[in-house]
Length: 324
Image: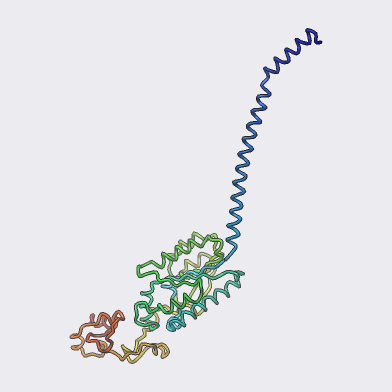
């Protein structure tokens, strides 16, 4: 049995233990530790899920790599010899473009990529220009057979009508450029719009990634010096685009307007061989002044041909008559 001194010491130890906050501090610390562990566990699980999603996206982006060919069709006009062949010409143009790009990709080590082509142009305006140069018929969208055949040639080849509003083709091309310039599935971009200095600012934003771009040159367009300063690669797709500016091409005179053609015989002998109608130069001055000008002939839509009771004159001839 304890004596009185031992009982007194035990009582003092009990009082001291009760007065000591060490145990409470340990319990509070343990509680905080559990809370921190739960928060860290939650953060880890979120990070793990995010990494798994990223891996899935990365694996998806490794599939179906492609290169993009962007063409402003109003400036980079397809070779007139291809255009004049209509359906066959559209197919030939697509095959020539596909073959040229494949050869380029082999040199770049990207021959495993699919080729996506996007061409935009004002189809009505371009058809009119090509008709004046002697490569298409008189219809408002006479280039349509060529375009349709081009589109059918390969699944990822699209020649689209941007409409007749000014700058529509520019708007579409810029949107596609900005969309795919940072896309990891798009391994390279061939850019055929260097006739227009307005695209410089769009390409400048991607100057840090300039190895992913190739600028397309052509003898038929004025390649602005500002594009050379970008330091991007440059290539020519030989034979694909018209070798001279269309406004410098000798004006084609169809059989309906003159018996003498300034174009080669192969171009002159096209499918529209209607009997020639009288022009202002072939009429006497009094007869020309009495007859009204046929508006539909001037826009290429007169269905009466030589039987029309109005005067058939080309734009250049009529302007000369009005100023004389």
